[in-house]
Image 1 (cartoon, rainbow, N blue to C red):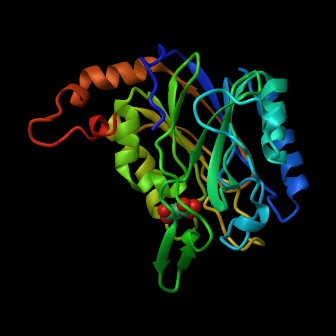
Image 2 (image 1 turned 30 degrees about the horizontal axis):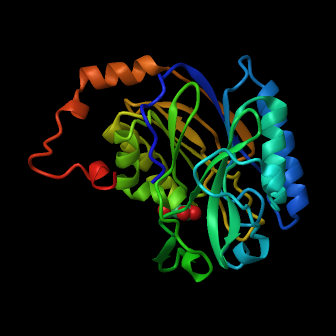
Length: 303
Ligand SMILES: O=C(O)CCC(=O)C(=O)O
């Protein structure tokens, strides 16, 4: 776990989720389109966003056969901001330039990453100077089999990450996960107890599990932990091999949906207001009512 010191003070900020469309086999085209959409997210709202988010697997088609083909060597080692001019990854270079040009924080969705001969599904995060500040490798691989509906096995080609990751901005401490990670409440709970006020998971649910679980899981994680929770999906493309659910959304600590996309390409904005978190925690004080004499505080087990 990348353990940080005291959480920064939490202040209002604007979040933009880019529900990116047109993701196809042409990587340079995917990158160019993502860059254009980042520019659009910066100018397309009354208030310039402080933080922009891209979806899971935004630079390649989604599927285990594609991951090794599109994987890039990022070259990041945890611990300090990383100057991406050292990186061999064209996606990382684009994201860094985009963050710097726009002067915003950027959660660069996820990309297939090659490191030590293994392939990971990896989220990269940039500060407004364009430095890569942290990465999150998807911890829980998406291996499911719902007969007649969907079978998916990321573990055919991917390796799971081994750390819980978060980063500090000047407006919040933000915890990371990727898609299937949302089904494992421990990850969110630990990040929240380590001071994250906001959790952001790039994701790409599908048309089988999406209608039942996408919103339910986000609102549950938000209410369980009294944090802001948000997932950013690719747009649905019925010509692609994988049909993403879409519906990128942001939820507040009371479980209220602050903004939600439909299925197509769209940018969703949400204003994150710390008083909602404060009021949720003072009105329903579960964060100070936990019974660690009855069950362990798992966030402490890792420290
Ligand atoms: O959990 C689900 O239903 C979908 C997960 C998924 O699509 C993913 O991890 O990429």
